[in-house]
Amino acid sequence: VMERDSIRVISCKNSEAAKYRNGKPYTDITGEYKFKNLRAYLHWCVRDWLNPANGYNPELPPSGSLMEEATSIEWSFASDGSIIIEPKDDIKQRIGHSPDEWDALCNTFHPQAIRMLNYNKQRQENAFNNIEDIIY
Image (tube, rainbow, N blue to C red; front, side):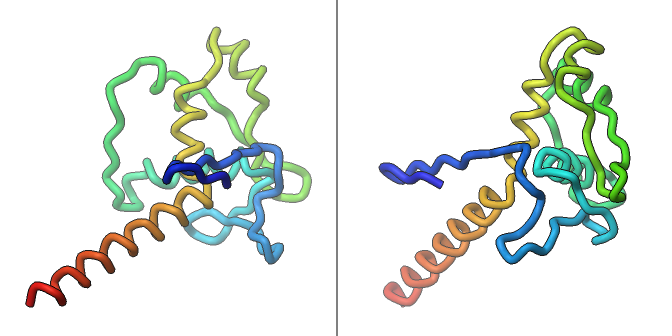
């Protein structure tokens, strides 16, 4: 993570292991599935987020290419039982373009980005509480 003038940039290395710093693997929302790499984990996070059964009720902007990319990506189980997403080159060949919109959406689910959002939200709530204490 780099920080400059309150802008944070996260390096999203899709090939890195889908694990916490302590070595514990990232899992899906049920805790059942593990992932071959960060790319597979991020794709699955969006899949869990979009699943109506999970109750998030997300809304995506109208985009034919985003919907095409979202519904064209295939996954499978690796030999160790972890989930793997098909290679990007295979997706490009099948749909005729790179799934860049979908990849961008997936990258917003990076665990470090989620931690930063939660941290900033807590800071804002604390600042608001401090202002109330001063006023009242």
